[in-house]
Image 1 (cartoon, rainbow, N blue to C red):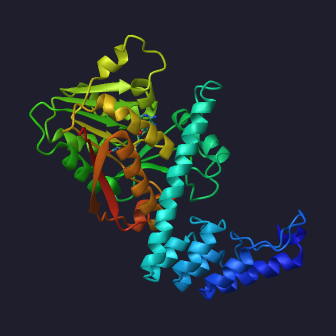
Image 2: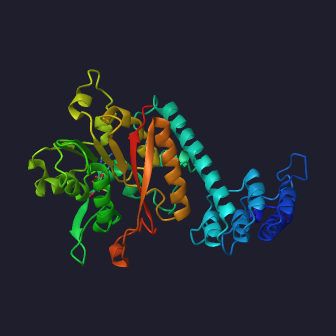
Image 3: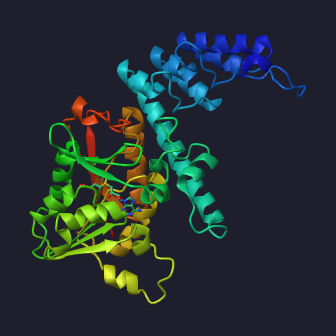
Length: 395
Ligand SMILES: C[S@@+](CC[C@H](N)C(=O)[O-])C[C@H]1O[C@@H](n2cnc3c(N)ncnc32)[C@H](O)[C@@H]1O
């Protein structure tokens, strides 16, 4: 890109990296200020987002590595990016964490939460504005249009079925056992939809949702997958157990396992949007048939944060009251611990905006290298899992 640039611009950008590496906030500020007012192609200022070839580090990475919070503050003020990843996929937040630079880490985390919260708000605004043009907005397209409102960590996903719910639902699924005899479900690109390494998370989620509920309680699970959480939920003997699942292959798997014949189990064939956001339900028939629940779990596939956020908004209509509990599979940005923290906080803030308070339990799920054998892309690489449990706070 810098072929078209004057050499002086590259030089100034390189000086900025060096000043950031030295933790020299004042010099960074000076380099970021414009030197020319003549309205030409370049105003003489260094570019806060400029990254070097070797590491792919920008000035924010260098400042985080140097542990200089003041420098990061200056860089962010001049357009430095809180979420840029280097050649190895690390953000400045990851570097701050590895250097034990707590102030830098917190600064970047706050910036990330603030900007993601705003970006998601903007995305919803674009959504609302385009609703009259097309009822079915593809969120993968939308994320591109809104320039990163949803985080995509691994490049090259846009052509895969997992990038769009519509594409995913129209392509086949494979249910198979791996070489250790463990079940897994893969999409057409051999990306993992679900596998048994998540057992511990599903068991703990079922426990958090169902333990201590009144006899005959009603539970809703959105997204069947391998039915792992459904099996765990059944141990708590719910009176009513509704499963929403749209994929024809997942529905076939579900019937093969006899789920449609289990007492108290009701299968709603379709997407959660069909039942919780019906386009045409003037008399509220669909909503009445669905009912309300004492526990709700959400774990879909090929949907992004904006879809989860849209589901959050439906919760006041389907939770039975302030004692009712909600949880979801928190795999947001789960290949980068810093971005995972950002999305933990953003989802908590969004739930709070809708009137729910969230508590988080920390799990340390065991994932083995063999879990990813024959799988196109590893979607989880963190040591900790944050399990959310939310409920309505009416007062
Ligand atoms: C990750 S799996 C769920 C795994 C499940 N928690 C378990 O314990 O096995 C995701 C499931 O969500 C379903 N799904 C995808 N899009 C959906 C949508 N819009 N509404 C409801 N379910 C959806 C997929 O077909 C898939 O069966």
